[in-house]
Image (spheres, rainbow, N blue to C red):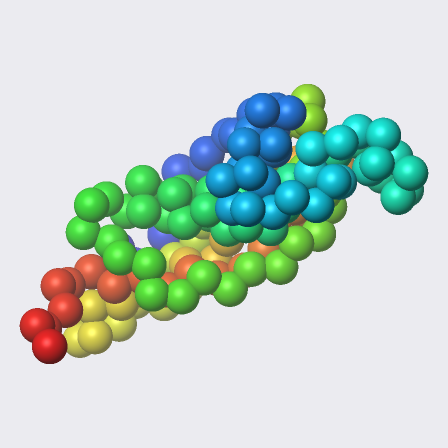
Amino acid sequence: MRAGEELPPLEIAVTRTLIVAGAVASRDYQDVHHDVEAAREKGSPDIFMNILTTNGLVGRYVTDSLGPGARLRAVRIRLGAPNYPGDTMVLRGTVEEVDGAAGTARIRIVGANGIGNHVTGTVRVAFREEEPV
């Protein structure tokens, strides 16, 4: 892996099931993630994905792209455009930095949907096994 290298893109269909299941799995019971009428009452055209689901999808993208030796060490993301049902989010990653001595890398992440960037941020991964404590 080298700085500047791009990870293969990952397309994720944003379905109602994904949005609701992600919210329930992360114990986020805010009505805007499962109740269309409540979301509309609060100014949203539909339910939308929560940050915990997005965080999990970003982590999955990086570890699936880099293989079983990659371990997440830090995930720093920001949300932008909401992920609504019926859209597709495309995750892309670029290696920003590799520290061979430390066995780590920093990956820049962008996840875009039909209305803009849903998520941006960085993920730090480690590639070697940690020493036993």
